[in-house]
Image 1 (cartoon, one colour):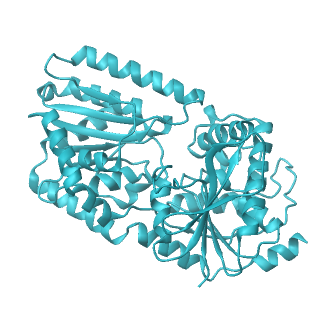
Image 2 (tube, rainbow, N blue to C red; image 1 turned 90 degrees about the horizontal axis):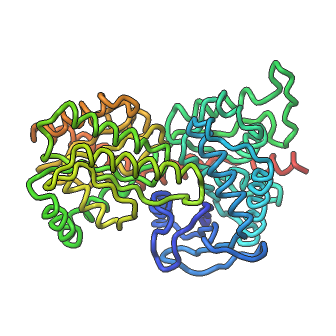
Image 3 (tube, helix red, strand yellow; image 1 turned 30 degrees about the horizontal axis):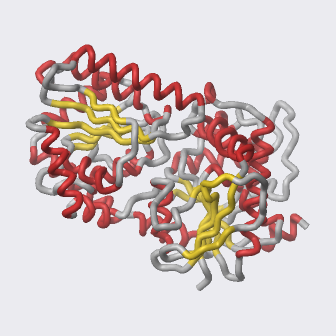
Length: 467
């Protein structure tokens, strides 16, 4: 059996840390039963570009990285990936920046990634590329003559074809995706959106010029592979002595009150401002909960150089201050808003101690926090999950209280219902959620994707066509 090659923008830290968050934690499971190599950006800056990777041994796999220049990060990562692709994929065309220089930098960085990775490949390798930062990587590898099986998984939503068409480079990016043998998505809706975009990418009625790339006219195999967590591992962490010490600490801070919790990166797609307004609506419509329930909102810093994220931070600062000033008392703070990161152990303990999990993104590919919240619960006295209908996870978690995050009264009503829910109903709902998570964990996700990729093979045809 050949090696598994993972390519992602960020990689695990060489000392065994998780570094880049949920994607790294999930993808790491792919190496548990296979030797392989993980390739990506080191997180470090260089004064000049290089096509030679730094290779080192990590915990269970080989780690290969390259540094990027400040200009490359500005154009490729902060620019095209996060100011163009990210808002477009989440339906926020009003925030999408059109910058042709950023796009060219994005392509150059992907080409450099390919040139650095290609010499490290061996016959029989399977390559699995992750997320929107590296959509062109497969096509760049094909241009270098790489004939290995190539899979791509998109962790964020794929938008409707009409939104996708707003990208000036939508046809070229689709051609890039068609270089892969298998393209995976979180939900069936995203898979359908992709197929419709591919089918309609030739010249339209307005006379758009047809694509001339060597993948034109070809639709790769695609599939729905909802990502998950290490369910048993996270449940064990939440019940561990280390987490129990933190749980006791948080319980002491809580006193005789209850907490609802939300945990996200600071991002305008996560519905953080809408969540605070929903909690404010709850305080207006249920005064009997004053002094009994607080919202703990953790918003870990993210993309701090991007203006839209700075604006989100300012909005949350203003909202939390206004709501606390309006409703707070000397003995009770309605909202505990925390703008820093926590360890996995601390989060597991927080999830376990909090009576309600409020996960209400405006748009999300999946949302692993919802799954972690469920896995962390005490089976005898579990909390209640409130989940946005626009999170990919909602399809898999019907026993959660599913809400419209844009409707403050809807979310407030769900929080009130969760607070009053009987232990019997809480246990019934949790059992249904946990059963699904135990069956469809991160190991199942990895196995399903790689099993679907295994029989795929069209690389020789692609390379011949390119020549």
